[in-house]
Amino acid sequence: MARIKKAAVIGAGVMGAAIAGHLANAGIRTVLLDIVPKELTEKEKAKGLTLEDKAVRNRIARTGKERLFKEKPSPIFHKKTADLIEVGNLEDDLEKLGEADWVIEAIIENLEIKQSLFAKVEEVWKPGIIVSSNTSGISIHEMVKERSAEFRSHFLGTHFFNPPRYMKLLEIIPTEDTSDSIVSGMKAFSESVLGKGVVTAKDTPNFIANRIGVYGLQVTFQKMLEDGLGPDEVDSVTGRAMGRPKSATFRTLDLVGLDTFVHVSDNVRENVEEPEEKKAFEVPDLLREMVEKGWLGSKSGQGFFKKV
Ligand code: NAD
Image (cartoon, protein in one colour):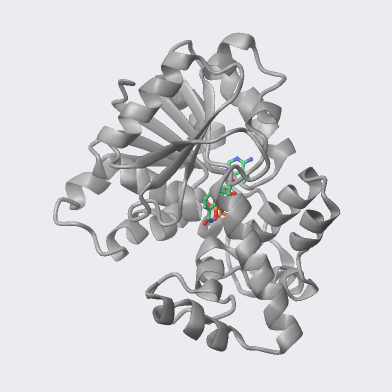
């Protein structure tokens, strides 16, 4: 079993903050890093925000630690657990990655941005440190194909599901270069320490669960538009009525993040060959328009539903 006492998570958004929470809950000291924004958008200036408001420490305070407590902590989750999480910004704290046993990337779903991040990670990486990506479906091999063979032997996909504390499934995605001992060590660790049910997936577009799940969401969305149904009507059928009180279609999209869902759909569409399948992953204009308006789902306060 992999011996992991210290972890580092890069990206303190919906998934990164919650993965850090899950690790801390399992007693693992975790560093949570994000980027510090260099400038404000016109919209933010109009709202009277300062750069400091946007800075990582504040943002993590909101989306990270606070969120950990909001999500109905288990009886073993208390302040001491949150204290296991140290927050910081990637630029200043890059060398902290070299002190971790496991580095998890959970940044924006974009191949080029992930590739350049892993180039930076390799600068401070030492043999023995496991590195993984939480991508929803980008090729694991492509992300690190320019990295050294030794780095690649320590690299794999570890795909947590949202919210990581409650979703038992974890997909592990090795590449041809990942060493067998890292794969078996991570599987044993994830099952016994993180309480996950691990499935090993091939490095194909969107792996297993999202190839099916995103397809289902897209088909439902396209059908809803054709039939003129509203999100409430769809959710009333696909939620409670099906015994899934919390995971109805549009509430799930809000939870995932509409921008992330668009990136994931685009990725699979660009990487599948069958025209029928390409069509199924076409993102409806309405969804792109919502993202352009900043309606990103629960994380921005407005998606298909307004967060109250
Ligand atoms: P998010 O938009 O909530 O957060 C992404 C974070 O990454 C932001 O805080 C952003 O500032 C940061 N970031 C962007 N570029 C960066 C860089 N170059 N360096 C450091 N930080 C950077 O996204 P999310 O929903 O947390 O998704 C993160 C990853 O997890 C994606 O790969 C996504 O596909 C995957 N994922 C998401 C879900 C979900 O339900 N949202 C589920 C499973 C996997």
